[in-house]
Structure formats: C-alpha cells, structure tokens
Amino acid sequence: MKKKALFYAIPALVVIAVAVFFFTGAGKPVNDSAPIKTAKALRGDLRIEVVSAGVVSPDVEVVVKSKAGGEITEFPFNEGDTVKKGQTIVKLDPKTERARANQAEANQLMAKARLDKARISLKDVSVKLSRQRKLYQEGIISRQELDDAEVSIEKARTDLALSEAELLQSREALKEANDRLSDTEIKAPFAGTILKKFVDRGQVISSTVSSASEGTQIFSIADLDKIRVVAEVDEVDIARIVRGQEASIKIDSMPDKAFAGTIERIAPKGKVARTVTVFEVVVAITDKDKALLKPGMTADVKVLTKFITGALLVPKEAVKTKDGATGVYVMENGSPRWTPVKTAETNGVHTVVSEGIGDGAEVVTSVINANGQTSKKKRFFF
Image (cartoon, rainbow, N blue to C red; front, side):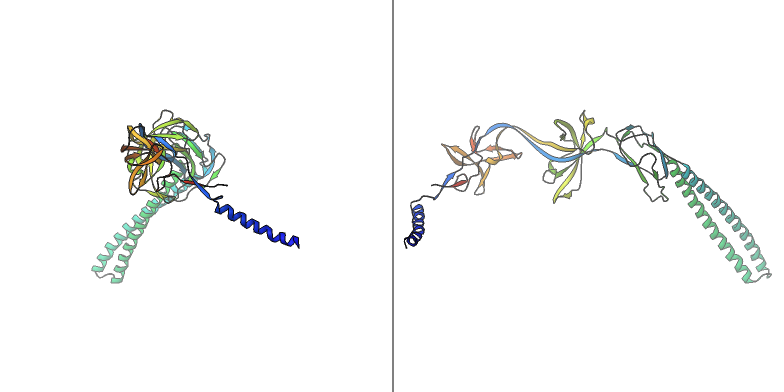
C-alpha cells in the first residue's frame, strides 16, 4: 500500500517543480544583441572592374582535310611541331588517285570525240535538208519526206547539245580528279603549329567521290603568335565594355602572372547560357610572355571600366535602406545612429559615399533590424 502512494507522489512533485521553474522566471529565453561589427569610412581608390571567365584559343585555327584516298606513306610531324607555309605535311600513295585521274582524262577525250561526231552529223543533215527542200519545191519528193528531213535536223541539234553537256561534265570530273591527285601531297596553308593529328602513317583513308563531300580530316593547325581569350560577359556588364579597353588575364596554372590584353571584338548579339544572357567578348593577348599560354586553358578576364581616386569608401554591407532612403548606421556613444547618405559607384566590395558622413566615421556593417538593433541570439537562463 505504501508503494502505491509513492508511485502517485512522484508525478505530483515533477508538476510542482516545472510550475515553480516557469512562474519564477527560470528557463525564460533571454535576448542578447549580437556584437556590432563596424568599419571606418576611409579615403582610397576604387577600381570598378568587369570580371568574366573565358578560354584561351588561337585567333585562327584551321582543320586541313583531304579529298584524296589511299595509304598515308609520310606524316613526320607531331602535335606541337611548327611548320612553314606551303610545307608538305602529309603524303599519300598516289596510285589510286592517279588511275582515277587517267580515267577521267580518257572520259573527256571520248566526250570530245562524241561532240565532234555530233557536229558532223548536224552538218550532214543540214545539207540533206537543204536538198530535200529543193526537191520538194520541184515536186520530186513528198511532204512526208521533207518533214522527216526537218525532224532529223532537230534530232541532230539535240544530240549536239547533249554532247556539249557531256564534255563540260567530263571537264569538271577531270578537274576534281586532278584535285584529289594533288591532295595526295597535303601542304600547310600557313605558318603555324600542329594542334591535332586525326590520322597517322600507315592508315588508309577513303577518297571522296563527290565535290559536295567535305573530305577526310587530316590535321588541325593554328597560328599561336596570335592568341586570344573568348570570354562571356553578362548582359548587366556588357554596356561598360568597349573595343580597345585594356584587360588583365589570369590563368589557373600561373596564379602569380597577369597577362596584358586588349578588347578586340564584342559580339553584336547575345546568347542564353545557363538561363543568363551573355555576350562573347574577344580579348587579344598582347603580353610579351603570351607564348606561355596554350589553347584550351581556362582564363579569368578583368577589364577596368572606371578608376576613382581619393574617394570616401565604406564596405558595401554598411549601406542600408530604411523607409525608402539610403543611409548608414554610425556609432555614437556606443549606439548605432541612422544617418542618410548619398552614394555613388560600387565595385561590389566598397561603395563611394559622396555626402552624409565624414572621414573616419565608424559605420555598422552588421545586419540591423527595424528597431536599430543587431540580430538577436536566444538563450535560456537557468
């Protein structure tokens, strides 16, 4: 019986303890303001820059192709080798293409012979038609015989037109065959560096049989003396970019080196990339050490669009909006006081203040609520 009374007494004691805990104020949350972060308004220079990512690429890159077919007998160059304009880079076994060129030449000779035959036939039926007309006027032959002669001359004229077309066709076929034959020796279109080999010695490539075909890719070549960065600039910043502006290029693999460049071209039309409209901007690299750069490197481009000297600067976080007005909180006697200010340019880190505060003013960079207090931290007092 005593054990049962004790069982009911324990919950009662817990309820009484909890009630005392809250009615006496123990356990209530106590609000403490977070420490106020401040910074000094100081004079300095403000650099306003447009920053964009891009890729290093050659100004001119060409993929050299061949319409010829056959086994590659010579390709002595490797990727990264420099070559001269007109230098032979690749040689193919010309046996197959030479046979095709000879066949095309023979077809042209036959087309010429057919054309000559058509001309002779036309001349023959022309003479016969003249004689038939004379005989018809003399009543010696019938009208049907005259009509047959006139049909014969029309047929001869048609055969002549067909022969002329066949000759033209055979000339084009011979020209194409000779082009393929000349492609068995592939030369560099300009002085540059071989970037990529698509084929190699011993490989057999197919010949294109139509002028509409693009040909087989052999190698790509670029002039690395003219190197550039193609960057994508956000539409918000593109209005501040103009041709001729100086740019600074940083490469991930060379973080301590900044390469000099100049804005060369700005795309007249934007494109959507990752739901944002961007404009392609071509930056020509003019730095004396540009030979260190390789196509495909990732680059960060900075373009200085404005430079302000001797401005009164505050951290961007110090500038706030209250009741539609712009201002800052200035610390006075240990408390923040709202002060309206007039601001100018910002670079995303610092903002220029033209009116409202003086040099050395201590401004609040913390988040301030509507009551002029920093954000609260809740804690329980036990």
